[in-house]
Length: 270
Ligand SMILES: Nc1ncnc2c1ncn2[C@@H]1O[C@H](COP(=O)(O)OP(=O)(O)O)[C@@H](O)[C@H]1O
Ligand SMILES: [Mg+2]
Image (cartoon, rainbow, N blue to C red; front, side, top):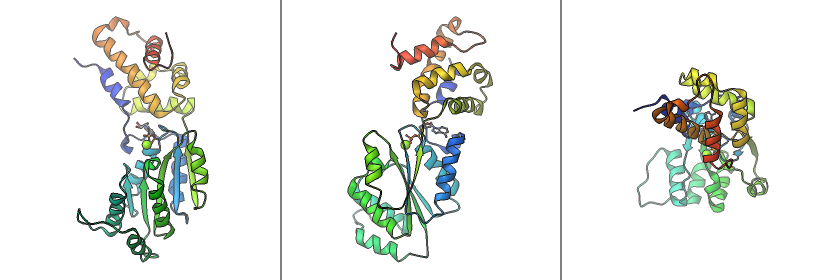
């Protein structure tokens, strides 16, 4: 048996696919700053923010929008082995595949890149840079010094990494774009647009400002947390529709189910 809530629930599974990108004012502001910064003489651009604020989604959108217009390469998952990383950079720039057992020498790569100066401008998008080693980040910086390659990198913001973001990168010319959690107003638009994109008009209509307020109190407007929360809410709806349909209130959204989801996720205790 299927419930319509199974489909609604699945809307809130995390996925980084800019086909499902939802435009919110602060996101599109930051997106435009990001895109414009590619035309400035910057070597590195940092997209910064707490986990779940939409960094990967923004990077994916940048790639989708520019891939037919610019020379741009997208590393959506970090390549942790230095050998594999340098190989991928070389292969992306040269357009040539290099054999499995061959190694790319960093100085050679640097010289190869330098000789392209004035001829090409290549953009690399690197997601999840908090996972790269210090040594590899230094190589990325040296590559960016050639001004042939420009890097857009994302970095998770955590309590103690704030320092890193300031000290460690200060010496290069940086644009720092910080993504933040959504405000209550933005969260409302996010939830409504997500439902309306797939034509769940009736459920969208039941969700009112007070419900959004409840969600925002617990998720603080973080997209990943909000997804998790609403996935749980609609799983409970799904369960009730299949097993206890009398438990689903008619004509209003169930506050009870919101509370059950909050308890289940440990946001509140019963
Ligand atoms: N603009 C957006 N439109 C639709 N969904 C989004 C948007 N931004 C974030 N999300 C959702 O939130 C989740 C977390 O966003 P993500 O970009 O992965 O955050 P981060 O990389 O900062 O940890 C994504 O999987 C996606 O489902
Ligand atoms: Mg991410």
